[in-house]
Image 1 (cartoon, protein in one colour):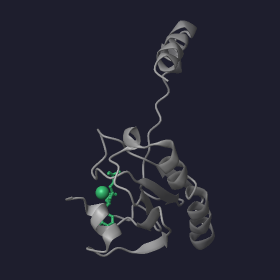
Image 2 (spheres, helix red, strand yellow; image 1 turned 90 degrees about the vertical axis):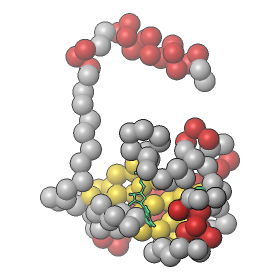
Image 3 (tube, protein in one colour; image 1 turned 180 degrees about the vertical axis):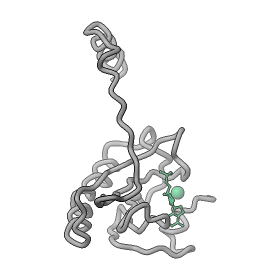
Length: 136
Ligand code: AMP
Ligand code: ZN
């Protein structure tokens, strides 16, 4: 399979590994959005969150706090973002991955949370809840 993360997992291309067990691999993101920026990937190839079963998800997500705490101890960031992109607009590698991005005073990493609360009425929230529940 022509997947760059599968090739990293197989050792066909090099990476800066920080943690590995039978289910997951954690390695430095080559872009280093901030110092310590790390990716966690399942060793099994799944494209994105929509393709993950619960068992694999639990294996991948359970490693997040451990690696987050290691980054906190190592680099003393002021905080840390956990980011996971699925499909558009920002998934560039189609092998599921979680970004751990330590945050520092004055860094240039941006996340924008626009607040649309003023545009919504209670019925709008209820409609959204209904739609989600119908599809669970
Ligand atoms: P995303 O935009 O969420 O799909 O992120 C994919 C990430 O993979 C980007 O932040 C890239 O910098 C990173 N990346 C791509 N190729 C490599 C590689 N060979 N080693 C480490 N990180 C990589
Ligand atoms: Zn893959």
